Amino acid sequence: MRHCNTGLTILLLTVSLTAAAQDDYSMIEKRIRTLSPSVDTIAISETPIDGILQVQINGDIVYTSADGKYLFQGRIIDLDTREDLTEVAKAGLRKELMDRIDPAEQITFAPENPVYDLTVFTDIDCGYCRKLHSQIDEYNKQGIAIHYMSFPRAGIGSRSYEKAVSVWCADDQQSALTDAKLGAEPDPAQCKNPVAEQYQLGIDLGVTGTPALLTSSGQLIPGYVPPDQLRLRLDRLSAAATQAAN
Image (tube, rainbow, N blue to C red; front, side, top):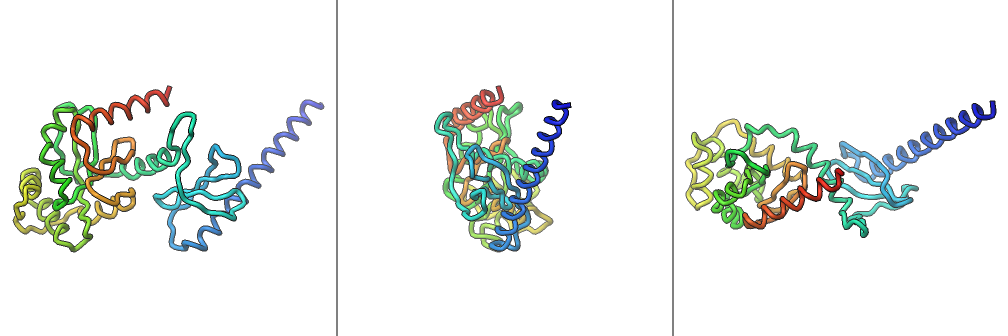
């Protein structure tokens, strides 16, 4: 009987602690919503640091003290493994959003059997975006497929936005995009297009400049990276992910 009573006591204690934690999370969520009433999603979870909680606010990651008194931004890095735990969390959020992307709404340049697939947010008038595209064949030779999505940095309604729409509505999207990145004015065209939605998705994913490269696992590589260096970087990321899984 003692054994049964001890087990029951432990069970009741576990339930009590779980309920208390949920109450604390509810309190923290309420406090955050007083700061940002229009937030759609708030998800609270533990971190490896005692007294520090991770808070997902829409597509961003912040932290709060367990008592809900302090809210702060920054990165948590495990100095033993050198792993950026904040980036890992953000990559997971990005992957969730990227998994909803319809491949038919991307302009793709890919080798026959790609080793890596990259989603690239691009601006037609961005200098480094043009440099990246001028080497598209070299990226493909490195086994890297490039799936373009539009991110006109000047915003919806800008000239870059209008160019992106015209490229999307062209009969040959690949040729129209290549010509536009060489400086040619695309033939004006209008049709149902995903440019505005892609721009907003880029913002939700944390894109602040172009080109912005995202791996299939949601890792963000900001800026232009030469083809050979990009392949090496993707190989390292893949090896690290395999090691972590094992």
